[in-house]
Image 1 (cartoon, rainbow, N blue to C red):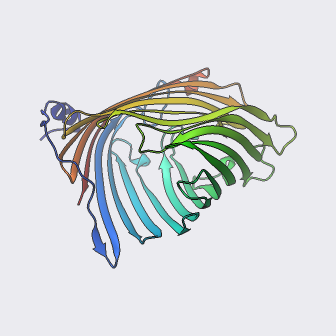
Image 2: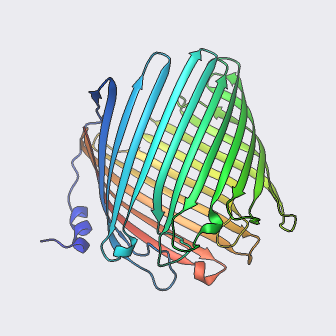
Image 3: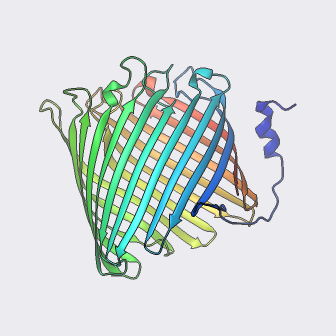
Length: 386
């Protein structure tokens, strides 16, 4: 018998074949719908899953994640219903065991070439062990959301307008009053105007407004957020694709005794494919996030760089690095510098099976000693489909 601690060492010594078959998960027809089941099973060793400084809590973690996708489409519409379950068992800390669930419903309706409507409903019931409010208890929350979006203008037209409205409800299920201060409702409105510059490139102007309403009466975090951005976007068919937005953002609090904040803001999600089998990607953002650990808001400036490469039909690798500067505003002057690195090797012996070995490391340096930590995770994942 092989114990858990010898498992990764054994798998690392197994030579990978040099060829494989590529493909997408297959579906079966059920009552006129395409039904696509899939399954991911992973074993990982996390040496600090509570992200505690100086007295880390480590454990082997077994994750079983089945996903069920039901979809159908006509010439002018498409519908999807997806349900996923993630059962996580902590071998050395049973109190952290939990089952996450997520349900999503999406639809796209095209009334004609110039008018399209998008609808989305979501429900998630989950628990987190990282950066929890209480080190001995998972953060247990439920997130509900509904979104409607409307697009005016043909896809190939010179101009196009997108507008959307989204409502989110965040609630916690912890004992006592733990995390009650984080419960809130969010309403967000976004309007975007696109102007085609030629080919697959479009310029854009975007306006956003969000309203954050906390459940606790007279919460100092009740606020509104406004942003105006300009940028460019390129279709995914281009060698260089994605979008870049830059602008200005303001966070206004309802309580006159709480300082308002404003700052330049940006978002970049760009992919570059010098070859069909190699992709470089950049994800960067600077924005205000909702408060945590007593802060009224968190100013997040982060950049993530990655490289995916297919070495042969059977073997691919993924490497990524992220740096984040997290400034907690309104409490104690906390400032975190997070460095995160990850890499994985993916082996695809058949179209319906995939095996990956991965490693991730987080190092958070904070000006508060109790928020400084290092975390390493070693992962073996098997993905199966029809």
